[in-house]
Image 1 (cartoon, rainbow over the protein chains, first blue to last red):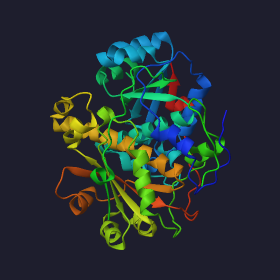
Image 2: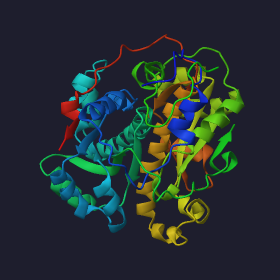
Image 3: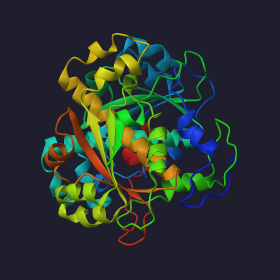
Length: 204
Length: 204
């Protein structure tokens, strides 16, 4: 259900929408038992996929764990401090990156038929995959909030273990992991400080 | 000016807002001469800064080039195919990463007074800075659209040259570069295909 009406391009969204996406959104460390339907996860992908990536490579891969069996495979691979909340969240999302994303470029970047050959070097692919799959993780974070979901991203896990458990037979590697669902206010940190504009930015 | 009204958390934004952020937003390759006021760039930072990063490190640094002099320093460092549109855009944003972000953790992550020491190793810092500054680039992309701006991100530039020209005396390095402003429809590619859910995602 949406309470905001037509917005034309070049106009900012309402303060309420911006609060939902940015200024009042919080990383959640505890979760209500409200379920997340599969259709909403598919909708989340269908927004995220439109975010810009270099040569439209969209190297991120998204593995949503929703069954108790799948979540039980991930849980022992999380850092101890991340384990309980990961079990509690209705969805654990492994955001991964396909180092061999260039195989899809003939389809994804039809403007330049030779684009696949620009990525013959694996070190270059690895850098592009890491940058662009992380960008896509940023798009997904805000897309989730746009759909009314909360997120809880985490870097503390056994990356080699997650690779071996979930992506053994491909050149796909985990980047980071995110809990998804409808958060509760339990275990919410006070909002941490942010750097002032002058300490993180400049205008020349 | 906003046309959407109060939205409560747990509700999706309107289709119009989602179209502005994701489904109808396009990477722009040409720009109108409508200026971008400095206050809007500061507002853009003030939304971006709230996006989640590991240990709240917010390692991205944002250098907005708006003067003809600053833009002329960047232009020769862009790949030839990116040069004209970069000169045309009212703002060129260098999204950089501070490899020494850990120096700020006593302020940014007060929950854990020892957090700075977790990042003594430069290789680990470099990985965290790259992941999280890229995430922040994703947040900024959607925040710009939420404010009515268009973006045109680019990876094709001389990274060592941009480092030497703009960040010579610190451990700050460029990640990617983005044109910002109000785009025109000139030189707009047709929307490229995206991977189907089944090719980029899965549910276990």
